[in-house]
Image (cartoon, rainbow, N blue to C red):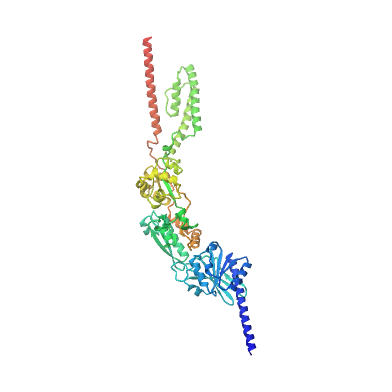
Length: 610
């Protein structure tokens, strides 16, 4: 009887040992396939069961996985974890499995770089009270006799009470293959949790116009407010806005943004910025800029009215090219020579004495479309005179038509910031925080030598005149020789509402000293929502929502109606060349008059003496 019991007991223990080995083999087959799907290359297996650990290490190492078997959590080597595609595996049947998970939290290893696999029960893992961030890859494998079900555990936000459980895989033990596998699908459902967005507003009135199209300022935060409404709808979240009056400045000694929009991001009070910002070196150390976060193409530009062409060029010689002037002068000289020869023949045949000065007078009269009292009597002289008058008539018509166009034209010689600075125009900028910051403080968006020289020459000592309200600055652009730095959208809106047709035609915009490398939305460093916001912003661009909001909110560039006729009054600057000619002619005639008197006096004196 005792022999029978011993044989039965031995058979039972042997059966249990076989089942245990088979269970381990099934786990290893599943684990290898799952790690291959995740493209993991390095595996760290934590367990106090040395025999089990060695078996796992040998099996995975044979499949080209770099595997380490660790028995104590103190053996966590964080330096060796600072690379991508690392898998950390433990089993709830091991005594220290909870310590392994707690150590991962303490050493901040729950994010997208690392994959965690825990063989155990979801309820037991949640009972540990560890918050797995939204971008973490923590998988729980629940194993039974016939299948392995894998769940991903994440907390959607810091305010979530429970983890969201996403079923990502089901492994069939008998068939040794996945019946269902989906770990690549991005997590885009926040289950109604809040997304905190921090906005920097330059004007308090913006709070009353976030969803209408009447206001002419704060275009960027109003645009992003609308986009965030769409994003929170996509990801099933609640839009929780935070409004600030500034961006926040970095305290260089502490490296802290204590206030403003960036302060909210750095201190964990916001999940994403509501304003686009420049990418600067100090900000890169604290924030991540979204590549898809260029939600606006708005930027700062200098706006000014191009001066009339007569201010920069002599419009009296512009109607014809140089070659045309040379040909015209050559023809006049040719006609002067021909008429001089014909005048001698006219004197010999008809006794009509015409001097060289009379011939010159005929040519000048033809050129200025005036009549002349002295005419030739020969047919050849008439033909030459009429040909000269016809030529000058056509030249006069072409010159007058082109000259009228040039009177209304604006100069295009100011094409860059240096030409603007050297043009003598008065300069100014919109009185907002970022303009004051970039011109008065050292930054990496401007060449420091350029910024400091510009500040010393144009701003220092006259800050109140340089930084003015947008309406004041654009009014000065409209009425004076003045250049104003302003956001393009704001300037376009004011131009569309207040500038007339002539003023619109002369508006020019040029780049500022700032490096236009784009402005992007930012999130806190190592934010778990990088993929969520990037994918959502790309969706807005793909489905046309970004374009729709952009067209409805941002004013287009005011396009002048060139089909309408406009009247341009001529100022003294336009006819300065005429006055110059008048003065030169009067001075020359007076000088010649004095010279004639002197010569006449000396001749009379010489006659009396001799």
